[in-house]
Length: 336
Length: 284
Image (cartoon, rainbow over all chains, first blue to last red; front, side):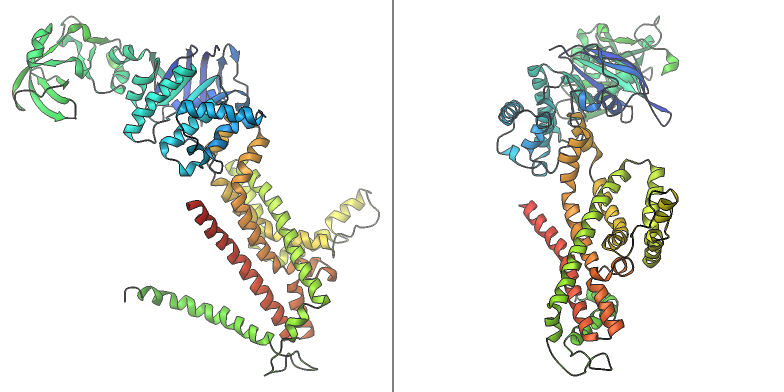
């Protein structure tokens, strides 16, 4: 099963505003792409264009090098999980899952076999799927929606903020399950989310979107540590954007370093770059402490530390950075 | 004390309803047990008999009952058929055309229904627009009998019922999340399959309720059968008019009225009972 997807110059205008602006990307078969962006950046619109629910103003979409831009949504064979699940409220979960099979006139016993196979894979019990959606919990509804999108062996799986309506603990659990499932059936998947943790933990590729454009598309580790712009750096969690000349007088521009890469006090001595700073604030966030430090140049650093500093707010401590982990953002100053 | 205060506020409304609806209803029930007049007058006062109730179920009375019931069933069936189609079209239209459509749909409702019926009478008559245009194009030589028959009575009543049905079913359709249709299409369903498996079954509760309501409305249908129909399809309302204002037999007219009011109240209460029953079943 080779199901790679390629998008070329995709543009979608809504009321003369470009909701999706000239996007090109390609995804190899079995890979998991997460599109991450603030709300209203057009990420859901991309999914709807790929799914065929909207037709693009410009550009084309290819699955396995076949142009499907003009194909109807009903003949694209793409499974989509909607943000609010869009389950059919009047049908039992079993009938919901069997829907894509029934409309394809697949014989009944084969239907039952396929549904049973998928619910076992997805972790729903026989008892649960006899209920109608309103009798199921959010997590169960989400599983039903996922099962329904996968049961007809689609070329591609689209997930539109699948975990947004769930509580935090369930979100982490389901996010891992989605990834396990995706690897198990080896289906090419595109997920849309605004939660960077979800994106970082699940994806083979992350695309960061803003105002209809994909700003960077890359491997999660690279995009996290070596982002190509300040926007990308900020979007993937707490970070430090520091003038680069603090580290080396001859370099201009902005440097980027994640808070957890900065060491303090005893640990700082092992680092190849050290500086003193005054503690501005300390906040406890569970496993770690966030320490705000101000150097005597007036530069603020955010530091994530396992241990609290030994000295109180207002005292001067040493911080240390391995210069290898400092990343120079390849961006002009005027773009900031 | 706290509980009593809300009752004070419903006194004005309640007294108005008592004065305008409940009192006449009871008066009517009393009249229905009076003996019919002999010679002059509308009834014989201070009498009591079941004669009127028995005469409802004689041959003539039964035929009116059957006629009215079938008429109401026919009107509600066609109103729902067309109303549902209109509601589906309405949902697909752009905002501008939806307003135009709504105006066309509701305008007859803002005008006195009598005028609407007279308009239909003019349109369907021997010299109406339909017959005239057919004759001038030489498709027919003699005007078609389009008026004073069962069909024209039906058209009139359907015309008066459709706006309500359409609005009701439109709101029903609109309450369905559009994403559900998207999901069904994306999973591979054709438009027909979406309609058959998703849209229609999801509208069943609404269709059921509007069906009962439109039967309740049309059990009392008067304008269509009276102005556009012929005597062979008299309904209860026409008979009430006939007895009360043409013959002057008030007790019989009152008996028919009591029967009609009782049936309509039963039909209006029926959907409410069904809803409460269905919600009880669903909550289990």
